[in-house]
Length: 279
Image (cartoon, rainbow, N blue to C red; front, side, top):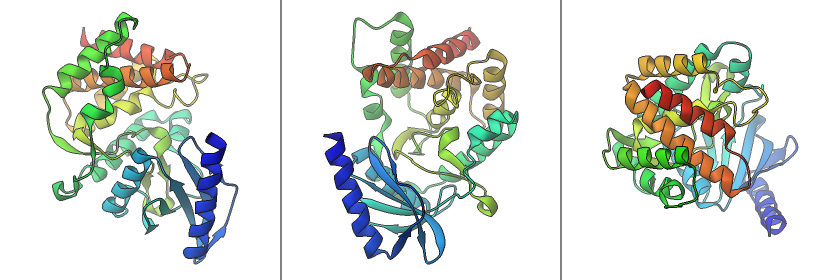
C-alpha cells in the first residue's frame, strides 16, 4: 500500500514538473505522507511537495495564506501540489541548538511564531480545531501509565478553558524552521490548526531530541527551565499555562509514538520536567 501511494505521488509530481516548467535539482525525498522534489523554477531553487494527506493539504493551504510572512514563500499552488522557495544551506534551528546557541534558537523560533500568528481571523476557515487534533490522547485507555493519564487530564482542562484563539502552525519545532539566508528563519510543514496560541510553542520543548535522542538537549533540566523562561519572556505567555500545554503535547506525541511501536522516552522526560516545574 505504501509503495503504491508513493508511486502515485511521484507520478503526480512529474505531472506538476511539466505543468510548472520545473527542472529536477536533487534526489526526491519520500515521507510517510508526501513526495518532496528539489527543483529549480526559472533558475531559482525551489521544493515541490505533492501529497494526498488531509493534514498536509490543510498545511499547504495555510502556507499560501501566510504569503511568505514567517514561512517559506509559495511560488505555485494547486490542490495536491505546493511549490516553495527552497532553503539551500540546509541549516535548521536544531543546528543552532547543537552549536551551543539554544538561546538564539529559542529567540528565532519565538520571532517566527510571532509572524505566523499574525494571520487574520478572516483566514481561519477550514483549520482543524485543537480538540480534534488531541483526539488520540483524549480517547480513554485504561492501560495507559499514570503520567500519560495526567497529560490527558491537562489537555482536557486546557481545551475546556480556551484562551487567545488563533491560527496555529501545529508542528512548530526546530526541524521545521529553516535558514533562508537574507529572508531569515522561516517555517515549513505546518498542520493548519485552530486553537490557543500557547499550544503552538509546546512541540519545541520536545526537540530536537525527538529527531535525535542520542544527543539529549530538551530533556536536560536546566536547559528546559531556561527555555520556559525565555519563551515566556519573548512571547508574553504565562509560564504556568505554558507548562501545562507542554505536558499535554508531550502526552499527545507519546500516544502517536506508541501507536507506531516506539517508546516515548523523550515525551515522558519532558512531561516530568514540566510537572516538577509546576510543583
